[in-house]
Length: 320
Image (cartoon, one colour):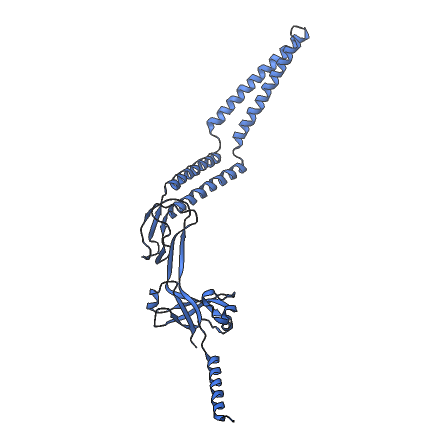
C-alpha cells in the first residue's frame, strides 16, 4: 500500500527545522555567584582580647576589627630597642676614639713597665758579675734573667696598647659596629610593625564574611583572623565550554540567570583562565562530562546585584 508523499515532506521539513534550531541554540555556562575576597592573617600567635564587629557587618577600609594581646610583643620590642641603643653607643664610642684619660693611663703604665724593665736589667747585670766570682748560684742568675725578659715583654705589650689608642679605631671595626646597629634597628622596626598589626584593621571596604575565632581564642601563626567580601559588585564564576572559548570577545556581554531570582542580570566578561580544566561535577550534563571548560568571571551589573550572596548557582548566556 503506497503512503502519501505529503507525509514524508512534512517529516523532512520538521527535521530541517530541528537541525536549524540546534545550530542556532544559545549555549549556557554554569557556575555560581561570588565576591572578591580578602583575608587578614595572624602574624603572631596571641590571644584575642577584643572583637569590634560581627559577621555580615559592613566595614570601611582601616576600621578596627579586633585586637590581639600585645604584652609579649611589647616586651620583645623594648628589648630590641635596648639593643639598638647599646649598638648606637658602641658605634659612637668607636667614632670618637679613646678618651684622653685612657691615653694618659696607658702612658703611665708604659712608664711603670719601662722602669720595672730597667730595674730587672740592672738586677741581671749584678747577677752576672756575682756569678763570675761564684758568689751567686747559676739558678739564681737564670731566674734574674727570666725576670728581665718578662719585664721587657710587658714594656712591649703596654707600648702596643698605647699605639693602638693613639692610632684610633680601624675602619673594619667601624663597619662592624655600623652593621650591628643596622641589624638592631631592623629588628626593632620589625617588632614595631608586628605590634601595630596586633590591632587588626579592615584592608578594604566590604562585608565581614567570617570570624573563625572568638574572644579569648589564640589563633596559630598564619591563621585567617578575618575573611571579607570586597568589591562594589559580585561576579559570576562560570565555566565556558571548550567549543565556545575561541568565540569570546573582550568585554563580552552576558545575561546571567541566578537560581531563585526571576529577573536575569546583565554582565560583562572580566577574565578567562588561560588553562582549561575538566567540567566541574555540578556542571555535568550528559556528554559535557567528558569535555573541557575554561573558568571565567563575569561582572554583574545593577544595584540589585549588590545584594546577592556568594555561592548561589547561576547560568550565563552570551548576548550576541
